[in-house]
Image 1: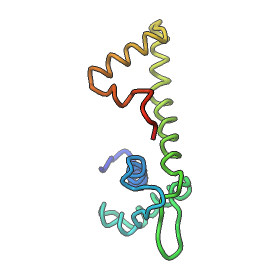
Image 2: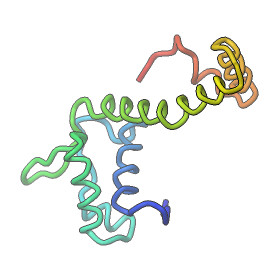
Image 3: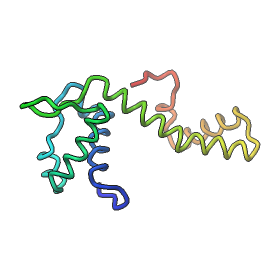
Image 4: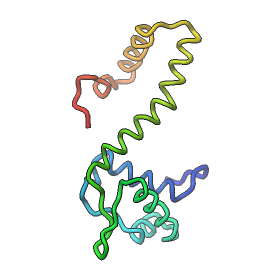
Length: 133
């Protein structure tokens, strides 16, 4: 899990976000405490607290006095939308820029994506008719 290029508190926040997105930490459920996170990842509790506080500020977690941290209702949708935007900015925009540079049309790009998707066996997850989470 340790990525030397990224602060530990940000990695903790991402791990919690991933758990919310993949459903292992459902909305309205109790989230791990800073002590649990610091113990699990063998890090300073203040570092874990910084990651948790980042998620509170983002509106993903909420503190309930005396009982702990909980995943807020709508957190999964909020995170998916955030990650979707980042995906578009980091991958789709450069893809379209390069396609434009090469003179590829929209249908050419779609065909290339479909072909590559079949090659690597991900077409089922890219099915636009599939139920969205």
